[in-house]
Image (cartoon, rainbow, N blue to C red):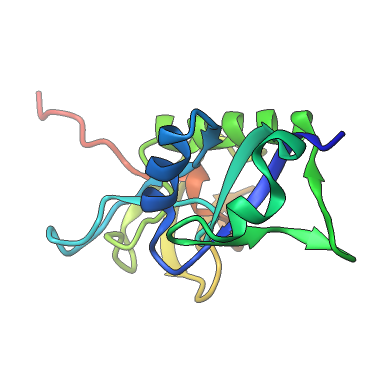
Length: 173
């Protein structure tokens, strides 16, 4: 019996089309998306957390394994050796919590930060510290900041971008 969560590959930028098709067939779908901070106001402010994939919770014996392969916008269920690979329930819940945490903190990307801008570290081992933004590391969701510690010495630290936020300006009194 092939029942549980499975990853379904989608054609480029067709995740929403696939979700709509799955909903029409009464198949439970999980399509994790995160809010992003963008510089260009015309750019999308929500992006897929796993581009090219959605997760379905279904009994593949009832649906028919091949039916998902021919679904408009889909490329098929992720399989190994011809057998669909199930995704553990715990992993789906962990992804849900992670996406909720990222969206709750304002998004994942910090393209709007400028070199030398003061930032606040919102979580992790350096939570509550102020730092100076140095760079967004290419190809990753990490940033490099200059952290002032012990006797005003400064250290370069690489952190997940979600842990860094623009420092809130306090009103002049």
